[in-house]
Length: 139
Image 1 (cartoon, rainbow, N blue to C red):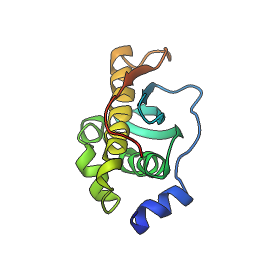
Image 2 (cartoon, rainbow, N blue to C red):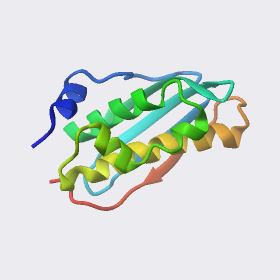
Image 3 (cartoon, rainbow, N blue to C red):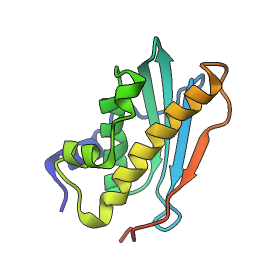
Image 4 (cartoon, helix red, strand yellow):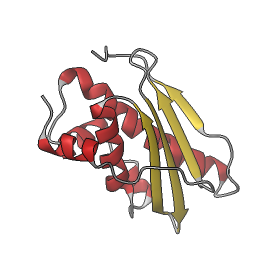
């Protein structure tokens, strides 16, 4: 059902945790399946210097969070904003159709963290930018 890459990122997720003094925070949730993702970013000179995530969800949700964090680390903000659900799914070697919503959540959580950073003008941390995604059944 899942690719080797998905299982590797699920079994050994990268960049888990919280950045207490994050420059940007983005949080998304899917009320249908219950998946929740929060991304924390530190930005220096328009580059994502550090990124961490906390995810409550299925195998695909955790794998998506892990790969998104790897893809965004070290990237300029404009490059990181180009990380889409298709890019994420391809990087994981594909996702089952009923799990594609997880790739949307990952891309959206990263985008919200970047937006949160940009809205603050690189100032002190504020409350996270949140989004809710309704959609595909999580079964």
